[in-house]
Amino acid sequence: MGLSRRVGFFQGLRYQGRGPMIHWMLHRISGLAILLFVGLHVTASFFMQQTGSDLATTLNTVYESWMFQIVVAFVVLFHALNGLRIALLDFWPEFHNHVDERRAMWLQWSIFIPIYSLTVYFLIVVGLGGG
Amino acid sequence: MRARIIQPAVSFEYVMWIFTRISGIAMILLALLGLAGALIMGARLQMDLATLMRWTFFPNPNHVVNSNIPDVSIGWATAYWQIIQMVTIFFAASHAYNGLRVVLEDFIGSSLLRPLVRGLIFLLWLFSIIMAVYVILAS
Image (cartoon, rainbow over the protein chains, first blue to last red):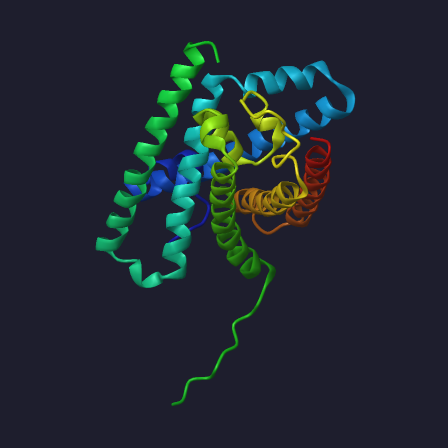
C-alpha cells in the first residue's frame, strides 16, 4: 500500500519534474552518449594504429566530420557544466534552496550558451569552408 | 536522552559517489591545464579554434595534425602530455563506467544480475584503460 518503486518507464516520464528533471535526464543521456562516443573512438583509433583497419578509419572519419562535432560539443559541454553544478551543490548543500538552485541553473546556461555558440559558429564556418 | 554516535558506513557506493564528483572536477581542471599549456606553447599562431578545442578535450598529438605546428614531436608529443593524457583517461574511464553502473543498477535492482553486470562493467573498464594507454603511447 502507499508508494511503490514499481513504476513503469513511460509512467515515470509523466512525472512533472520540469527543469530539474530535464537536466537530470539530459545529464544521464549525455553521459551515456559520451561513453559510447569516446569508447568507440578509442577502440577505432587502437585498431587504426595496430591493424590499419578500414572500418576503424571510416568510423573515425565520421567522428571527425564537423556535423558530428556539433553534437559532440553540445553533449560534452552540457555534461561538464551540469555536472559541475551538481558537484558544487553536493559539496555545499546549504545552496539547496529555491533561490540558489535557480541562480545555479542560470549561471550554468550563461556560461554554456556563449561557449557553445562560438564553437558552433567556428565549426560551421570551417566545415563549410572546406575543413 | 543522549543520541548514539553513529559511525557512517564507508561503502563502495559512498566512495564512488565522492570519486565521481572529484574526478569530474579534476577532468575540467586537466582540460583547462591543457588549454593553458597549448596557448603557452604558441597555439594562438599555430592552430585554429577547432584544433585548440580538440586539444583541450584531449591533449593528443593526433588531434593537432591539421595545424601549422612545424614539428609535433617537439613539445606536443612529450612524456609530460602523455602523462596528462593517462591521468585524464583514468579519471574519465572510471567516471564513465561508474555512471554506466549507476544507470544500469537503477533498472536492475538487487538480484543475481547485479554482481554479473558489475563484473562486466569492471572488465570493460579494464580493457578500455589498457587500450587507451596503447593509443596514447603509439600516437
